[in-house]
Length: 266
Image (cartoon, rainbow, N blue to C red; front, side, top):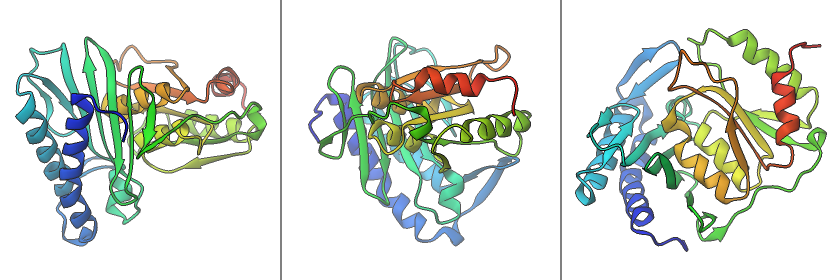
C-alpha cells in the first residue's frame, strides 16, 4: 500500500486486527447471537465484537477523537473537529447467510470533510483505501473508475429497500426504469463495497436511498480519489441523517440522475 499517513496506517492496523476475529466468526455463523433491530435489520455479536476492537485500537492512538459508529452511536460528542466514522460490518445480512460480500468500513473526518478512508473485505482480502490528494488503491495497486461513456452500456449496482422502508414502491419503480435503459443492474448488499467497486471500475455507477453516514463515509473519499463523482439526490429534510447517494464514473452521472428522477415509469 502506497498511502502512509498516520491516519491510514492506524485504520489499516485496526482493520487487520478486527478482521481476525471476524473471519473466525464467519466460519461459525450458526453459533452467533443475533438480535433484530427492526424489520430486515439485524445486529450480531460479531458486529459488536468487531466494533469494540476497532474503537479500542483507534482510541489508543487518539482518545480525544470523536467516533460515530453504527452500534455504539456517538462517542466523545464534544469533538466534532476530528472523528472516526465506523461501520464494523457493512453487509450484515450477507455475513449472516454465509455470503462473503461484506466489509469493515472506516472514514476519518476532519472539520466536516472526509480526509481518508478504508474499506476492507477480509474474506476476499481486498483493502480499498484513499487519502485526499493522494489517490485511491486496492491493496498495492492504484485504481480508477471506468471510462464507460454510454448509459445503455453501463453495468450498475444498487441496494435496498429494507423491510421497514416506507418507500418500497418508489425504489422498485426506479429500479425498473433504470434497468430498462442500461446494460444490467446488480444488487450485492453492501453499500461500502458497491462504492468501492465503482471506484475500481467493476461497476460504472451506483445509487441507493436511505443510507446512513457510516455506510458511505469511506466510500466517498475512495470514489472521489479514483476519479468518480458522488452527490446526493432528493434528501428528505425530515431524515437529515439519511442520504440518497448517486455515485458514478462521472461520465454517465447526469444521465443516470435523469433516469432515477424520471416521474413517469413506462
